Length: 431
Image (cartoon, rainbow, N blue to C red; front, side, top):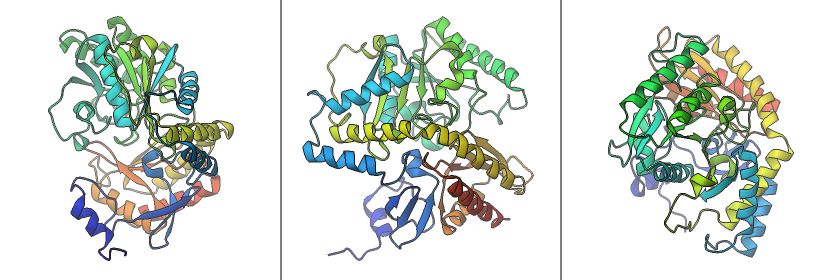
């Protein structure tokens, strides 16, 4: 028998109060196809958020669905205690794509767990619990990752097993360096990094940084900044962890990995990934140089990381992405979408800035004529877009309100035009 109590009431009864829901009247998504989803009332939406940048290729992609079904019909679970062909095959492909020499891959079930594992590797390898992180950053919800997250809205405790130092540079158009040109901005951020290292006691283990900050509102530094940071890190033996949970797999269009926009000093020592590779299945992981990955001197396994079903999904999804050049599509269609968004923003006094690259765009909303964040306006636009048939996301640091746009990478030109038009109407509705 169906429970007659409204689903939202049941959610509030049995789930934590801090488990956020979008919309004044939250919606239940029941199915999807391509770039569209439907709710329990039969309403159809163009999905410009992809389950938080996770539905990377398309909803109900036949190739992924088939791979999951076939693997589930053979064996669903075995753990890492046994040889696992799909896990080995996906690791081989990711290692080759990573750009990291002599790469090893460890699979987890989420980006949080991937970053947690990277922090374990870095602190063990360097025998230090000191971490450099970027202001406004987000790295997950485990005890270690909330401890290094530089965005207070997503870091519920100051307690941490790590000592974290926060560095300037990830937010280009706010903060003390915003008025500088790109070269001077990078030089100032490097000087800040040097100064922060002067405060640290002993050897810092690693810098962890998102090439484009996700939860922080799709903000990023000038290209090359992390390459300049790497030169400093190399002098001190400090590792560089590139958090590619939201930027990986070609979403930024110009590059397959976000770190490649900062590649002057070579690849990172580690990169972490999740979200898009599974197209909704729970896959995360760490790629690291063998010397770093193999530094642990205790036994370890992963019960669910690298499960046969999720690995089969990842293999099929990655093959589809590469075979259909979805990185190129992100560059072409994303460029068009950003042009449309900037044209809309030029007529909207609520939009302070449109930023992003590829199919990763952010619109920062402020009170007209000021730099003061306007979270009420962001919430209102989110509601108006949903009413118009478009799902988008929100984000930003403690002093910003950003609309986040990240559709599946198979987005068509017509869908980009349609989504931009709906968003323009939503912005006009709050004027």
